[in-house]
Image (cartoon, rainbow, N blue to C red):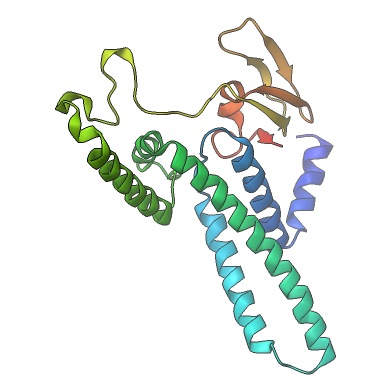
Length: 225
């Protein structure tokens, strides 16, 4: 461990929990908007953030109408901070819902596989939304045209003939990443491209090449920017 690591640990310990949660929420928001595939649901972080939002809303409602100038000024600060958290949460959820709408069958399979781990892919509300939304779409497709096809051609997740009917995100999409630690050699599959990623480096690289080191899906040595 070098001096930079020691200074980073001291800085984290001296940072208030609210500020750390805001920083982590911001990183999750950026990563979700940049990554081509949906990232695991940050359960602990979202529980803390949503609970803090609930408490702040209750505080604003209780203090609204107080004629004390100091209280009114405090409420303005609280409301400003509250709106910042609410914007990040709404934008974060919209980015996830957009991916769910685009690749529901693929994401459902990934979520089912992730339920055996400590990091489920979807939250309970997201899973309920995706299940209901996909059920409505399936019924609509069936009544519109699928019912007129042979039974063997009515499946939306058919993979026969070596061709999959399931839409998947483009894992070879280019993303901007920053190395939080020395990662080492990165090999871009399908090419002869190989490079060394050191702490502080910023690269434009295929998502599939850095996914295993990314925050949320891997070791956390690389963050999306």
